[in-house]
Image 1 (tube, rainbow, N blue to C red):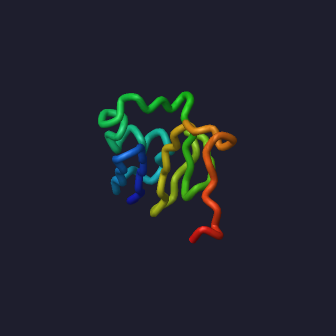
Image 2 (cartoon, rainbow, N blue to C red; image 1 turned 60 degrees about the vertical axis):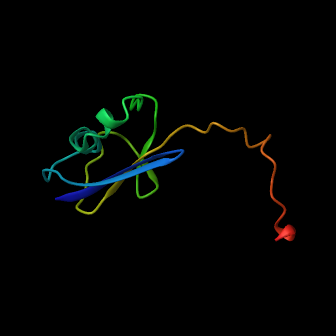
Amino acid sequence: MQIGVAYSEPGQQIWLNIEVPDASTVTDAIERSGILKQFPHIDLTTQKVGVFGRLVKLDAPLKAGDRIEIYRGIIADPETVPRKDMADD
């Protein structure tokens, strides 16, 4: 079955469409995609993953057409980031 694997960091986004066996899990697909070789700093023991924006566990089974997303941690404190006033538009 075909699924997608997506990862993004500042200045670089990647989306891979790959074929995986029918009984594949999120971990199986991420490993098969090769994304961990391209981004060796990805740490699946600490980073969250999701399918279509919904958090899932690494052993979650996949369905054809699923899009796995590997999330990065928040690096900016929302309390300190200035907000843009919508009235200024």
